[in-house]
Length: 217
Image (cartoon, rainbow, N blue to C red; front, side, top):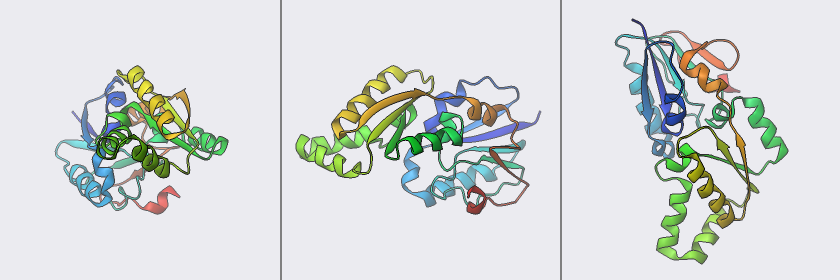
């Protein structure tokens, strides 16, 4: 039976695995830590995209991610959401994301998946705290987040969401941001898992047709 390979960031692992599948799916989750090295992330994604044995289609559960997906191509049809990163995917639409930015430009988005990821923002704060003390840690984090005014926590139904929301609220206080929260929507994630993978919101490419950064303009 034909299998769809879904290659996703670990940030969305819990959310994607919770969606019932209507057909055979081969999930692969990529470490969030690779976002620090876009070239390494691209190499890993190309390796996974290029493995096509018994695969009918590849769906990338990634946005453009700083250009990391640009140039990727698969030997089978390839679909990728037309989003610049995973935040619109968790919110359910690019329109929602753009509206929130228009509402308050200095919004930093956070989800449970980001707090569980490798070298997440809270672990970075603790690292600086242990090395330099509280005063230096607050100063460093304040500099990092100088352009932000609000931390918005996206609730997605993650199994450890309540404790992560507490952590996010604590982090907002530590770095001097106003805390808010909202519920995400599964609409885009549902389509990533079960389709349709064409039409509004997706870029659909044929075999060996590369993703172009211009397609996300």
